[in-house]
Amino acid sequence: MRALAEKAEKAGVVIQDVIPTAATERYTQSFNAALEDDLNTPRALAELWELARDSAIEPQAALAAAFDMDEALGLGLRSVLDAQLDAQRQPEDEAFTREIEEIIALRAEAKKAKDFARADSLRHSLKERGIILEDGPGGTIWRRERR
Image 1 (cartoon, helix red, strand yellow):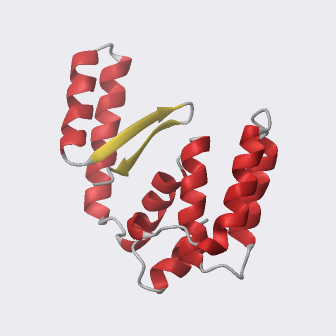
Image 2: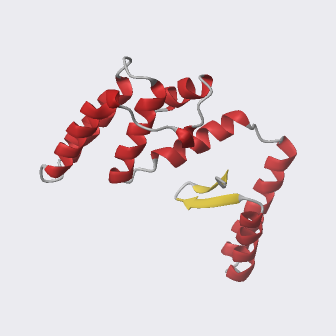
């Protein structure tokens, strides 16, 4: 998907503006047939994968069809791809990154001390700045909110 997005961007296509074309219809129909066949997700994913690998289809058309398929599957490919491309386009300023990581460390300390009001306040202040926190088993990661 990322390769398709990069090709589409090089062609000057804005990801949000892409639409599927007749060239992608075979994949879309096979994808829909797979889902209608007792929700045959492995076959549907195979169609999505084949679409992404088909070099005969314009990257922007393949990407649009893939995003349509993704809506049915709920994988969140568009948001992941947008975040990756945003990160490529706008490398973070070191001072800004350090500041965000310091706030995340303060939030972790507040959570450890069971000061959940402070932890929530720190999370909210970052959200107001367009920073989304995602807590996971490996710790907290952050990303810019997609606007």
